Every structure is written in C-alpha cells, then in structure tokens.
Length: 493
Image (tube, rainbow, N blue to C red; front, side, top):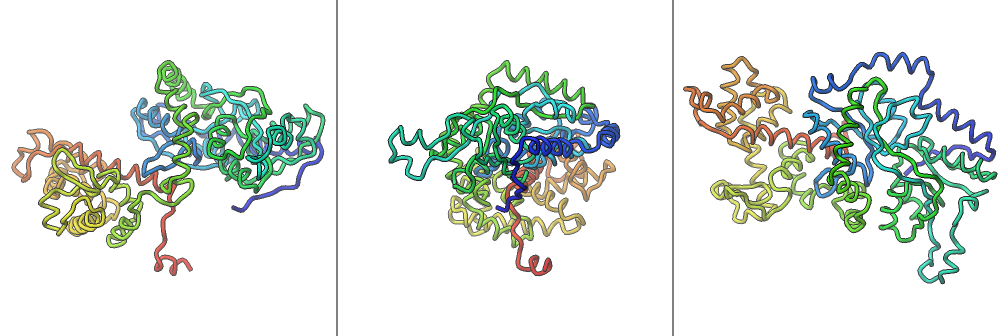
C-alpha cells in the first residue's frame, strides 16, 4: 500500500510548527469555519422528522467490518441500538481519515462521527463530544527480533524498548491526522530529546499500521492500548507493553449546534452503561482474543479478503445471468438462509435459497441442500419474476418488486399493486407506495376487497425482507469491491 511520507522532523520547534499546521487543517480559517457551521441547523428533531441518522465511522477490525456476511463492530453494534432507540434508520458512511470525518460532520453530510476519537482541547474547538465511551492510554507498538522465541528472557528484554526515553533519535510512524502525532511531539518535549516522526497517509487504519509493524514494514507505531492488545493477540511477535501517555477519554463527535442530539446520546449512553449490554459489546471486540484470531484467519473476513460467503462464485454466476450486482444477490441469499445450505424453515422451505418441495421439483432440484442446485433454481425463479415486472421502468424498484414476490408470491404483490392504485399511490414504485399497501393486506377490510384475488398475506414479511436485503447490500458495498465485467472494463478504457 502506497504511503505518503513527509520530511522527517528533527527539531522540536519544527514538530510544533507542523502540529500547528495540522491543527489548522482540521479547522481551516476560523471565520470560514464559523460561517459554514452556522448554515448547518440539523439536530435531533430534524433527524426524527426525516427518520434517518447519518453516521460516519472507520473501517477497521474493531469499529465496522464484515464477517461471514454479517456487518459487525463495536461502533456498529452500538449505533444499531442507538438508532433503534431513536426509532430511525441508520445510514453509515466510511472513512479512515479523521480530516474527512470532521469535514463531513461540519458540512452537515453526517450527524455524528462514531469513531474512537480521543478528546483533546484542540478538537473541542472544532466539534462537540459525547460523554466518554471508555478510557484508554497510548502504547508503543514494537516488533520483537526474528528469532525472539529462541532468545533467553534477558536477551529478549535487551532487544526491546522499555522506556519512552529510549526513543530519542529513533523514528516512530503514525498518521498525521491522529492524536498519536501530537502525543509524540509532547513526549519529545517532556524527555528533552528528538523523536523523529514518519507520517503516514490518513487512509491507513490503526490496525493496518500495527500490521505494518508486525510485517517489518515500519519500526514503531503508537496505538490505544485496547486496540494494540487485541492486535497483539494475533501477532505474538509484537510487544505493546510500554505506555507513552496517561489515561485519555475516547468519545464520539457531534456538531456543536446539535445540542439535543448530544443530550439524547449522553442519556442513552448512561442507560447503556448502567446495564450489561454495553460491557458485553466492549468485551466482544476488545477482550475476546479467540474470536479476533478466528476472524483474522478466516477467508470470510472483509479486512483480509474480498469474500462474503463460501458460495460467492455460485452467487456471482447467478447475479451475472440477472445482470444484478452480485453483492445485492449475496445480501438476498443471506436473508434467506444466512448461507446455511442445511437450514429448514418451519414451513418446510430448505436450502440456501429456501426452496419449497414442490418448487424444487418443478425446477429439477433433487437435493435442496446442494448450494449449486439451490442457487441455480433460485436464479431461474428470480428471472421469471423479473420478467413479469417488465413494465416497472426503474431497475432498482423492479428488483424490489422481484424480491418481494420471491418472498411472498407474485399474486400477493400484484394484489398490493392494485390496492395501491385504488388508494392513489404509485403502483410502479415499491418504496413508500406498494410496500405500504402490502402491509394492509394483513387486515380483513383490505384483503376481502373484491379486487384482491389472493387474500391474506402477512405483509410485514415482504416489507421487512426487501428493506433488510437492501440495508445489508449497503453494508456489503462498504467492504466488498464490485467486480467489473470485461465489457464494463472495456467501456472504461
């Protein structure tokens, strides 16, 4: 991975000057920053009115990632609960560059930064902070010698740094947009010697930089102790025992004008911390070393591989025949079976595409537990349904009609479209139109109407099904690259 390197800093004065510029990069011209903020009036009432909470977080092994088709992460798990508490939809964007995060927040593109941000006085001039999530301190991340397992204890200890003062004259690599750089500058002043700072691009996550130390690409870095310790459980060649800071508070960031959202978030955090759920989430991502190692070794871990499931090749082939994004079809397959080919529902549907016995027989499936047969048949069914909605002009809406029909049957979706037309809604649009009508088909006053042919349907199932598939697709799109066909590649050239 390409790294942006700047000129090394050899004098304390130049370090501090660089930090001054770094601070300016966060805030820019103060008057311009003030003018920009005054135009962003979005607060809790606006969020609830729109029904969407927009959040930016980092793509990392602790904040937000994909594992076995499921989005996970400390920040992600908390955000899901907070959005549910607000009764709004969660919309996530991703960046590992703190500058980008601050910019998007203050421009009103997101409502909150859900990222492990250390509270500092300079940052408090730019954003407001939630109550702290947890306390941490910064540690030095260093690599043991190649033959460290064969060394005596005394020889191993002699090869390592044990006190920050030993860093004088040495080089530590950190991102320019991190609190670690400011800490190194202060540390240089405290110990009365120069620590050279090798600055890395802000796009690199902390866990990726730790990996670079483990691989010998860089000599040292700095990390929060909880992140360093969980990473060291996978890289035994790392030593993360040397502290270089006192305890620091880690929190989420909001715009200073979002006082109502800040108050609501703080109240919710207090309630969470009074129970066990918060600590269970924290331990899941920062203490459970066995699960962390299992993820790191898995081919279905998005930070290491571009895979979603063991059946990606089959899903891609099916998606190609439909001209769908394969990640969208993967999201649908997960919704059906969580990629479990042996899953059987209470109604008798079985396999990765949850085929009923008669349906499987119709499409020549002899073993519903066979993913190849199941996906082939499921794709054929989707193609038939897709063709029955050829009058839908918008391709995304057409996909949603197709998915709803796969879930509850074409007839029920056709009934919902007729009901939508009767009630003055758009029968060619699923979102906020036909999806609302299909909910009504659970009630006698609607499914007993003369123009309703297929009667009762538990409408909440296709309603929820389509929404959850597309929410999962949005998550998959954050982590998994879309593969470009030969035709698309030729057009781009």
